[in-house]
Image (cartoon, rainbow, N blue to C red; front, top):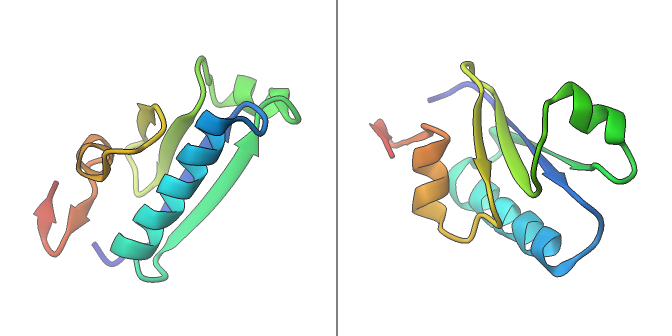
Length: 96
């Protein structure tokens, strides 16, 4: 996959679960995307309208916005293999 991956992580405030999800997402971005990943963090407590528009029902929720189709995963993203598989992201030609 050579196109840019756009990931948006929706969190609810600065709590341990949100911080863990942010850290795990950044590690995944650095390890697997080498500059091909745009990561956006949205705090739904500060931007509730963004959560409503994106239909976010739980946090943290990670949304792969690009490439289409959209994919979502809920949780702190601690299991990298599960995150990559849930988002249907291919690494080295293999879809995980």
